[in-house]
Picture 1 (tube, protein in one colour):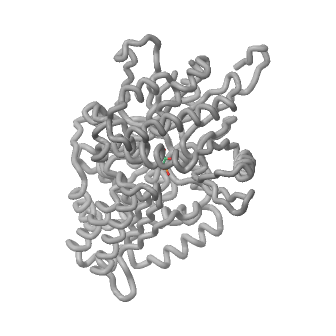
Picture 2: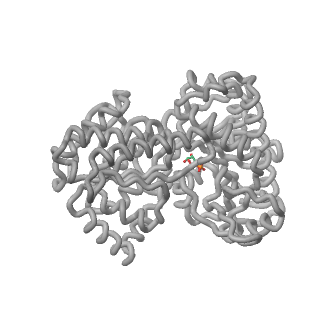
Picture 3: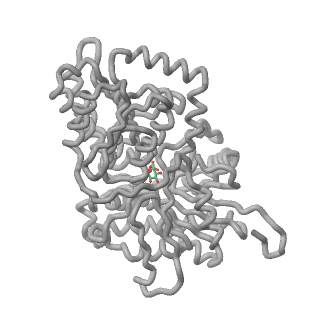
Amino acid sequence: CKRSNGKAMKQRLLVVANRLPVSAVRQGEDSWALEISAGGLVSALLGVKDVDAKWIGWAGVNVPDEVGQRALTKALAEKRCIPVFLDEEIVHQYYNGYCNNVLWPLFHYLGLPQEDRLATTRSFQSQFHAYKRANQMFADVVNRHYQEGDVVWCHDYHLMFLPKYLKEYNSKMKVGWFLHTPFPSSEIHRTLPSRSELLRSVLAADLVGSDIGELKCKRHAFEEGGNIEAQKFPIGIDSDRFKRALELPAVKEHINELTQRFADRKVMLGVDRLDMIKGIPQKILAFEKFLEENPTWRDKVVLLQIAVPTRTDVPEYQKLTSQVHEIVGRINGRFGTLTAVPIHHLDRSLDFHALCALYAVTDVALVTSLRDGMNLVSYEFVACQGEKKGVLILSENFGEYNMWLAAENGMFLRLTGGEWMTTMPEHLNMDWVDSVKHVFEYFTERTPRSHFEHRETSLVWNYKYADVEFGRL
Ligand code: G6P
């Protein structure tokens, strides 16, 4: 890549996502602590290596004062991050409102919230305007930091206007847009009042990517000229990071502690953001049914559910939290004893090393999303299992690569066609897993597919491929 003055330069990548990989917590007027942010997008992109990249996004906090903004900008610069400062009102309307109350449920087939069905309602209109305004703010920051030759890679449903705004600033900018969620069928998508404006803006990008199936791009549908590439780039994790962690003495010790602690029980594990798409109540209800139908298992199994709080200002998420607490309390009251409870439910994230140890001792991981993009918890579990080769139970209707990942690692899983692939590890009790399987089938929506094509699966982010594609632009 060359600058216009003829000098060679290293190509930079500007990643733009709503959320930065670190979230800021204020310690004092001008001091900040940075914590790794939760979510699949962050986990996936942390695996991108050997690239001169900067990440532009929101640090998850309102910083109204200039002193705080300057100090945070400086702290983030050390992590190669550039903040976009969003005030409380914008966060409320754009992030809590249009992103998380409109687009997120719609893209996961949960429909529009009732009051938003009429495009004329004031809340919908103002949320949509705030969404555009926020996208413009992201575009301004990108434009300020852009250097000729940079590749700008925009992420997710929060930033669908960004490709258009960036191209308006500079039509030569190389812009990619990547969706990490499912994209709904046209029957669902057409219920969104501003759908066409949103899609046209995305199609201003040179490359549109997604990690899950059936992405089709037809710019000609809008009778506009120009070509756009639409590609599938299945994301993954940096599996070596997990494997390395398992070698650390502190993690080994933690594994020993957990093994002793749960010596008399099979460990089932769920790790999810506390989101309605993750099927957490369904999972816990299925576990209750399992205990109900299998009394002999009541003191031999434990479900550990790590539920990472997310989008806590959105009423739907608040309702979900209470609902999950209510169900867990009821089941523990019903099946617990004076010395043990069947469900350990944690409303927080675990630090990375504790999480690796937990994955390593787990017998059955439950990933029960109702709809999902690429779910990386299953990848993380596989990476930490080593020779243990436990059981991975996956629901349908999300990243098909998740299935191949499990299959190729000798895991036991459910295929979408309704058949089970039985590469059962010998040390697990077949009857037990059969009952679990039966109960989870009961709670799983079935969508038979006739054909399940084998594809190459990689545990690491296939960045090279993306690079080649960008290189062609
Ligand atoms: C999903 C989305 C990401 C998002 C993450 C966490 O994985 O695809 O774009 O960052 O959830 O959600 P949050 O709202 O906390 O950023």
